Image (cartoon, rainbow, N blue to C red):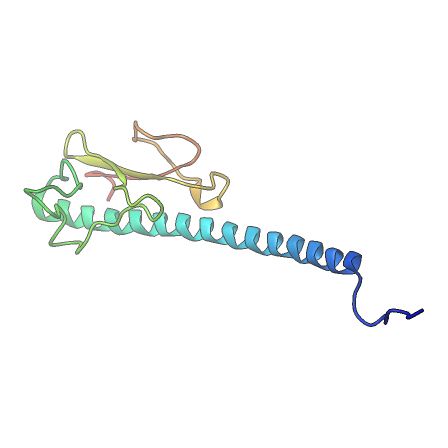
Length: 145
């Protein structure tokens, strides 16, 4: 009777190795997803600060804040002389929340994907809309530039 050669791996050994690789891939991809979320949240903060700076320049020039910063057919970029393109949310490509009810102050905000992110902690005083724990808000007025 012929004996089979014992060279090679058994089916159990192969299944164990595949299971271990699956666990490792899950851990690595989970960490990458977390890094992507943080990157998008940091991009939101950067975008809002860029818009805030353009709004302050707008106020210095026109002595008021614009009623909207959302592009339209009539005004493709309301902040054109101060900002080449108005940034949008990196996940949804939607415009950021903006309000200027009386043209003497403004409020811009974005919703974070990770509400526990340390950068999400901010003073939302003076902003009426979107003040949940996962909203990053910047505001400005004629008295505090």
